[in-house]
Image (cartoon, rainbow, N blue to C red; front, side):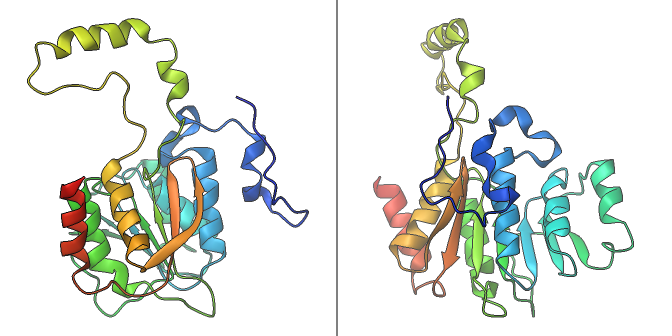
Length: 246
């Protein structure tokens, strides 16, 4: 598939703005578990924000390394319910310039971190609707603009994309056997593996619909929202009602 130069391209764009020059899909995810264009967008979000950074869900800590590298001299707090960091990533984060400002927390992401505010929130943990909703409810109040910059919230696996299109192109026989087996399964299995988590998108849509955020940028499955206001009263109840009605 040919990449097309965006119509708003300008000569002042930086490297992270030029991912349209590359083929970006799940084959170049590596330790970070993101496409190259998704990681570039996350890097850009760091650069246009300021203040502390909060990451929800770090897995191998590839994204934690990216956040730390992009945000020199800023505090990075990373929450996960287990310690599962890749050795190379853990060693990078233990360097003298990182170890006192990068905090690898093993705790419940659904509980807010008291007395802290953040200029960037990156959510890539529990991808279910209830999981993402709980993370947003826990941390949205702490997301605040710093130094006149934007307050941004990035969500991975939030949008339909072509990350796995290459993988499924030649799997016609796999699709056939999945259809056959589904006739005998109580729980149906999709013929094509999902490329995003609908629950993540539904929470993002609610944030926009209820006026708490607006879309800032997107790349493949990564969606970055700009915070406009704190969460409206009864946000969670309305979000659940809308989710159940669709």
